[in-house]
Image (cartoon, rainbow, N blue to C red; front, side, top):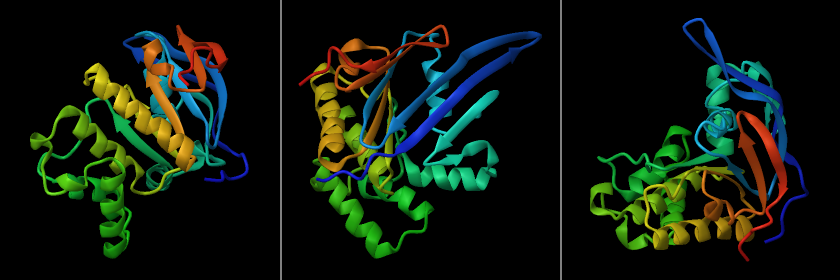
Length: 238
């Protein structure tokens, strides 16, 4: 697949996030700046307390910085109303969470279709795309099954398909293999890698594990709220 001309899909400029606990101010991220281009596979890495969870929330437009600017697809987010922000986020970013976050009362088809229904896609398009995505993640035979009837790996595959349903530019995967065994983890990470290489999706993978980050071509490493490394992944898996 031929990729589009390179453009910046996400940019953080001197972003601070300070939490107030009683009278004490605790900085979670301290003036971090980075840009991500379309088609990149980037791992945001750091130990517990490094600021990566806060960076994830701000990167995914789920939280606002105390100061600094965040641009998503060229739009400065602090200028948007909550409804416009939610719409831009929903169309630009697909989320994959460690805990899957599937709706237990919806079957596989319905879980994949949900974001498209929220964004008022045509029903024919919803049916076509949900079926295609189920096939892509190897679950076309499970469309009428519910999350409780699936393995952990299958649930995460549904979550990946759901994340892709609105055709977002960015897939943000937050510790996506945290609840999976090593074999299934490898399968999910290979799926993300394939989405990046064959479909040109921009993948942002948040992890505390070096062997998970090894699937990305670029690493942004955080320590004590600051970026200590941003560059080529020296241990990338071929």
